[in-house]
Amino acid sequence: MFDMMLGISNMESMIRCIEPTNGDPPGVTSPMDGVVGGGATVPPLRRPKAAFRMSSSTQTYPIGTPGQPWGAAERAQWLARQQRQRSHADEVVAKVEQLRERFDVIDYGQLVYGQERYPLLALRSRDWNDALPVALVTGGVHGYETSGVQGALQFLDQHGDEHAGRINLLVVPCVSPWGYERIQRWNADAIDPNRSFRADSPAQEAAALMALVAPLRAQVLVHIDLHETTDSDESEFRPALAARDGKPFEPDGVPDGFYLVDDSENLQPAFQQAVIGAVARVTHIAPADAQGLIIGSPVIAPGVIAYPVKRLGLCAGVTDARFVTTTEVYPDSPRATPQQCNDAQVAAVRAAIAHALAQA
Ligand SMILES: [Zn+2]
Image (cartoon, rainbow, N blue to C red):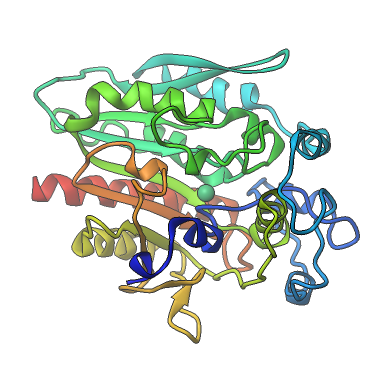
């Protein structure tokens, strides 16, 4: 098993969506590629695969000294490159406000970076019943992964009532508002929130979500954490990760299609296949590569890989839910529109809840 053969630190460097970057190296791609790749309304520009298949010896991230982990100066340099490109208030908070008529809104904290403040918002079933199990939906743990955020909001708007009286919904559409605005994977401290779901978390985003969920941990039956795997993972976020940690960047491909990440310490194959089956009616499922892998991990069933989610500090490990999955939508596919990506996230959430309720 790969998780037994590799140390966590080595494994982390292999893990993609569950681990990437943000601005593109100058001269390689336009800085706007990240915006488009993040799932905005403009169709993605495809860059030649060769552009991000350079050998590790020629790929140099523009910050830091190869082989040396970043210090405070390099992190500040990185932060100075991050620019606000869209509005959390307009694209997330305004939609949450529209949903306030039908769901209770929980203001579970505030994200503070310098002078900037972001509200941390969750929505829950209005008829919350402590006797019922809970379905947790999280989006935007990686702020650039747009369909996770918009898919969570769309799910509530279109289908948030369909299991009323059977399960309580707790939906956190945008865990990382600062990253959402900057189409960025990391937070302002150059920390990946989706490695930070652990005690004494260094990431405000993760700490706040953990505090929100802590009283419900044992009550959560199903948790769907909504993500994307983007071309910018390979062109920007993975190179940035390697540079930050003083490690060589090892280029890899980007799978074309949707896939899921199961918990290798709580495998639920029937549950994962129920989700894959529902999403396959909306968008295509990623094939394994020639080595039988997706982003370097063995494909254990069609469209499914697995990580030890709790040990890696992933959001998917934030509860003790029996049914857990991490979705990975591919928004840069020439075969997928932004709406299809949102629809894929919605299909995944609905299938996950339906399967969990049928087994409960
Ligand atoms: Zn992600």
